[in-house]
Image (cartoon, rainbow, N blue to C red; front, side, top):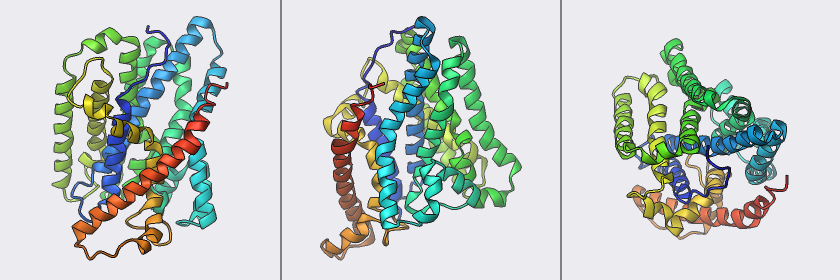
Length: 374
């Protein structure tokens, strides 16, 4: 076993930046973006990364419970306290803004948003939520945090590999069940059911858990593995091939490639990307991931992701976003579509970084200092 000590993974802020950038490219370049999968991949990277980081923290807590007979209940309370301190303040600040300005049907949606259930609204109503669309992924993570710690803290270490294999099977099985038993019409019209379903994301968290297990309990083996770069290349090729196969089918969503295999192939790519980033040896992206601008943007990535739909939303701008009001005071350039879309992206991105920086320094960072109070 490794010692229970804090480890700062310097390059993971860079991974966070890559993930959030993919989401922004997908959501903000809609008129000119030929790669509709970018946002999907960005979310999958976040899921696998959360699976790795959270599971490793829980391993440390579980080791302490076994070695020092610490209270499991105390560990769970402390875990939830620290997670809540990191996630809740600006999340509920954003909801308060939605309430005050009545943004995007907030009055009807607030129970789902307050109780982290927007993904269940999307599944049951077969519709998205306007500028609140992206909160489904935060809901999935929160639902995961509420249940997963008990498994790690109560199981013996020898059972962990079985737990992660089961998570892989449940994630794949949920999506395959939807493909096998739902009609093509339902799959096409209600494809969001598998996309935002918390069970359908368990394979991503499971792969993150496997990575945490290797790093925490099999450190020597993990550092000696030689095939990570090959795995990264192969998984990327597989991901792109699966996307291409999905494009060749009759239906955009109702096909086995999009429903079952796209997410797991993206998760394997994320697995190898993160694994290479936490190794002791450097690799081709090390300098980029560790660079100050990238690392900084990664450190404020939660705010970037949380606020981006309120800064600009392609489908729901009017009356709901900062860009809608800001645009009135910007120079009125007569630009072609491509130039205007890029111009809009750059202005919105700069404002988003400014807003997220204020959020980080005024709210998130000061509050985060209280994480060790209990």
